[in-house]
Amino acid sequence: CTSDFLYKSVLQDRSRTVWRGMIKVDEGADKTDGYQRNDNLMLSDHARADSIPGLEIKADDVRCTHGSTSGRVDEELIFYARSRGFTRKEAILMIVTGFFQQIFDRITIESVRDALGAAIARQVRQYE
Image 1 (cartoon, rainbow, N blue to C red):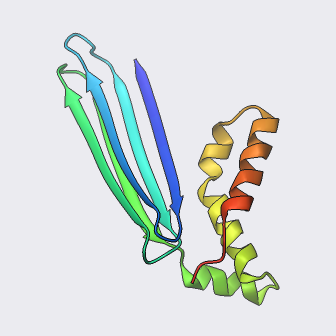
Image 2: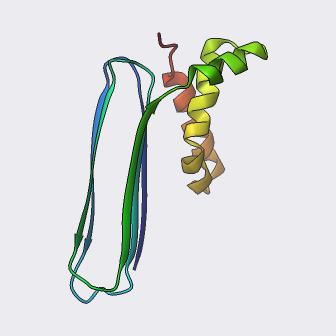
């Protein structure tokens, strides 16, 4: 059995997310390979992300791992993009789109990828 779970969030204003991930492996489910990851990108000092990964393993021969990251946009990246003619909002949108690239790469239907990209562009606002 294989499980590969990726959860990404971008938070702005006073938004908050709580992610509770759990990989459960029952007795006898040897050779299970499980991975869960949560990445958060905060566009505001008031945004908050809580990650609570969990593993409940009852078999002996498994490989199950988890990871979590939370951080803010690097102002140097914005400065670099602005020095090349992009606005602050365009720079942030490029950074957010790049952050979601792993998700885009997993979507095999082009129209769904395009709709997701458009939805992200509508939601990203300039932050201070």
